[in-house]
Amino acid sequence: MSDSKRTRDHRQIQKWVEERGGKPATVTSTKSTKGAGLLRIDFPGYSGDNLEEISWDDFFDKFDRENIDFLYQEKTADGKESRFCKFVSSGSE
Picture 1 (cartoon, rainbow, N blue to C red):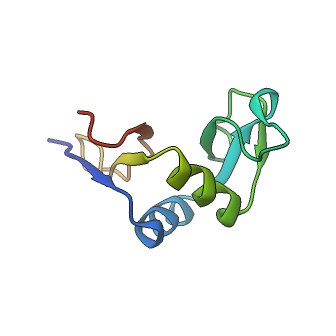
Picture 2 (picture 1 turned 135 degrees about the vertical axis):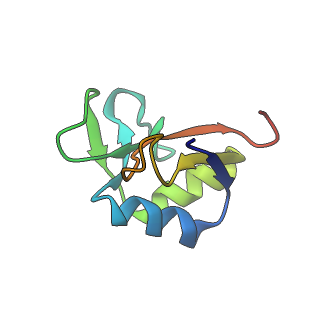
Picture 3 (picture 1 turned 90 degrees about the vertical axis):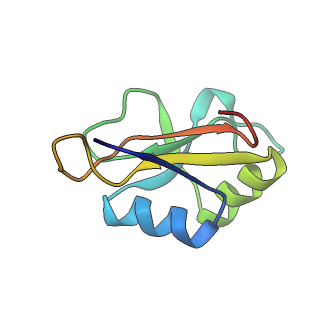
């Protein structure tokens, strides 16, 4: 069984993403003068959106301002390393 975890811990998020070769990103069409738009994690070979890499500082600034939680899995149901992650409103299930 694959269990999802939830965190707001910046170090844990960055570690999980970088272990899987990912980078913090924003959807280019949603970016504004106020900074990052919709947050995404860009994994090589998996991007479907028009993504632009952003710094971890910009990523976490938006993450904290929007009060977002990071939902993720360590392993898939068959035990392989998972890249599943999504952003959810803090406190939502």
